[in-house]
Image (cartoon, rainbow, N blue to C red; front, side, top):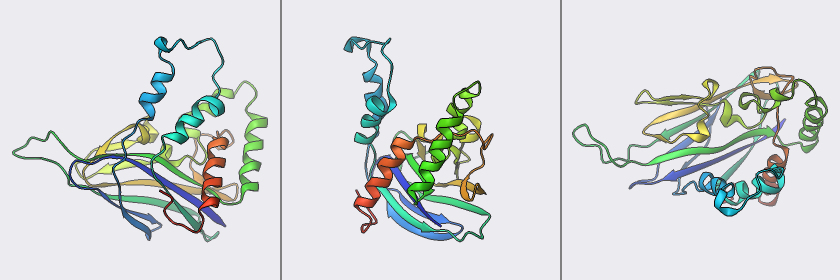
Length: 238
């Protein structure tokens, strides 16, 4: 079965761009330098709710109409990879190695360094019918007493940055399973990002807290799917 892997980094470069290598089950998928791309989404989103902007806080907030356009407008450069996975595999390991020694470290002090943030890491079936099937199940089942489960950050089905861990050579660990969601943290120095996927419902997904209660950001998935189809003959759609 074919899958799409989508990767996008924010990066504030001090002097030298970091080098990254992406592996799936120890197979090298790509190697590239992460270009300068500062993260403006959080400040823009905060301004959206600024009291000085005369926003009506009693007005319902629409993810699709309000937040999604801001999210898309401020995405980092995205890289798309079409992956053909052998269905006999029971486990998949996605590993992203980061080479980044760019800093002014001297005599035990450091005031400047290259920092990056993994803002986008999605892995999902290429077949849009499968995505629609899982979205229909979510929509049908989430209405009820267990609705809160569908908004748990641990139970996003294809947004796998929320199931990834950063292991830095400086012993820094950012583990999303411990409520330290990687997309909200800057990382510096050398290390790697790891995400393990298991086979469930015939597809590869993270190990969820309760696999029958999951959430899907279907509108954003559709954006990624459509964007890839527009540029499927190009590996890099920067």
